[in-house]
Length: 318
Image (cartoon, rainbow, N blue to C red; front, side):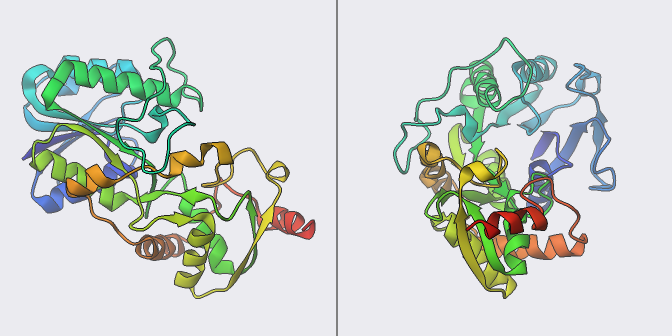
């Protein structure tokens, strides 16, 4: 199988390319050539820039499928489809759980849950526009490719090489042990999917030439914030005491923490994706691999979560 990956040298794309190569696919990468230049030395690269609309490198060649990892606004997707035309068989678009309305969905909500209204009048990616822009991209892919369109909607993706570092914060924090500040409720449900499970789903869908929409959510068993933190501690061999702290005492964004009205976003059903072949990696396995990766890279500063001194101040008030 010949696969064109739009993106592919960062986190999700890297996992997709790794799995595609193990699967025996012939992979071509398209991107700016600025990151991950040391990765996949034997994989052909086409250099271009989606932000500027430079797709000249894709004006020749044919592929059985394209995996669009880096399409965030309708222009990205539309221009890619225009230049590729009928020279690709299936168009698999990596979307997001952010396309859904944030409230009103019950546990085990499936892929037919109402989405947010698509947005096309901006290219500014914010918390408010990210999901609606992805929804517009989904619509454009489905309209152009019909039964040759496949949409994958990941939840929070976790694993080695995660630049967003949501799970990485909790893995590192739990490994230190002791009293752990948690804004909000320990009972909050949380869904993280292993990047390698997501990649395997993508390749399975392409191999089966399967259309439709699929949730990529995990882990293998439902968990909560308390369950996630204690799993991280158990894997690291540490002991923790989870201490709830007021949500107003911490920054607006805190890794994996959600306000109670949006807890339904952490209870999506993975049934359709599992039936299509998505694995279910245990959370402890993902945690162990993140812990090993983070330590190997020297545990650089993280962009999310409080510093140790700030957490100590939060805990002092409890």
